[in-house]
Image (cartoon, rainbow, N blue to C red; front, side, top):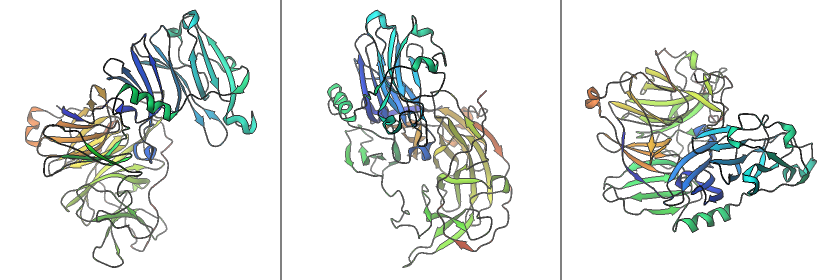
Amino acid sequence: MVTVRRVFAADPFTETGRPVTVTESEHHGLVAVAGRQGWREWDRRTRLSPHVVGLYDRRDLTCRLLLRSRFPVHAVDFHPRLPVLAIGTGRYGGGFFYNGELLLWHFGSGRVVSALADTREIRSVRWRRWREGRVLDLAVAPVHEEELGRESHTVGYDAMLERDDWLAVGEGDISWQELDGPCRESDDPRDETRAREHLEGLSAGWREHGAVWSVEALADGRIAASSEGVAMTMWSSVDGAPPVARPESRSLLDSATPDGREPPQGWTALPVRRASASYVTGVPDSEDEDRWVALVEPDRDEPTVRPLFPLAPSEETADLAEIGAAVDLDGGALIYAASWLRIGPALDVDGPMADARHAATLVTRRRLPDGEVGWQFVVGGQVLAIEADAAIVHLSLSSGLLVALDATTGGVLWTHPLVVAGLPSTGSALALAGTGRLLVGTAEGRVAECAVPARGELTAYPGAPAEGPVFRLVPPKPPPPHLLGFRAEFLLGGTVGGGRLRHQ
């Protein structure tokens, strides 16, 4: 149904972003790279952990597997004989405890084991090469900061773990008693400079890639994208000629309206694809403090804000926190995705394969300018990008799914997992580039040109029941009455709801 025709930015080690530590194994023929995919408001924008470990074939540097860690990765080391990669992760919680995991990645089967019975920051991992790798040495942080006082950030414990068969170690098999050892200054193998030099030695011309936040097909046929750390990259759509990149220290127009001006004081610019006007969000001057979507009136020395409608389309959705992505349908309708702040449905996915929290998101179509609700749709996970034409709305979810909805009814037309360069991927930017052609910028730093069914072709692609994290179609309800006295207030921010709904 969705076919990837071409991949841009197909350089080695793109998936792991900014590298922090690298190790090689001649025995296994692999390179392990631990890195960070994004760093500028990544957690809020994606609800995904940015900390990843990639396994690459030493012969052609192709990425074979990619793992997302809940905590920052300190160290990685290959078992000298078995197909196991030890991964030490963790961080200081900012208040008291040092949390983390010891992950055993069975890369032959893809299985990942979180081996500690209790959370603990693991600062270093190293297999002993003698005795066939029965012993794993760890540098372990103290449980909490009062244990060793001010030295807790750099001093910890040496632990020596021994097993006859590390493939047999299961979830939580290593108790806290086994982590008790001599106290000394902790090793921390993370060294970004050395990691960069290592990758440059493996691949001449290697450069760091970050998540792609915007992508466009230009009128002359070229493809342009902007990503973390790079203001603009362009490729020829004809031959995929090498890009011209201009590094920058920050993203473009992150807090400006589409005409390049700063929003009025106290209001937050709302990024809307194909915007026919400058949208902002604010809070009304009323007791309930409902958040609203508004327009900035142009051509004035001091722009004024004209309120359109409340962000939450009904009382049941009154706790929506922020709009993450939106698209303007030629000034006639606004389709946007908004996440819940506290009481909305939420997913809590246990284990090291993903970050713990995936907030549910409400996708809503509102008529302009009165805000009448056309339809509402709930998905599990963050909606990272929206693109639409008059017939189809395309969504990219934090789970890696691409979802197509009927633009008129909100019904599901199809869902499809995004796979780029042979790996499950997450789309962070979308752009239509003609009939049946969708550009997808990914969190892994690539841009994929995809063939997708057009509206007239859907008879050959019957809409199947929604899979995975797509929940249900929500009947529209009229919005509650509101007062129109306004005061400007900051909208974005907040935390994800604490409710738990496990995958079954």
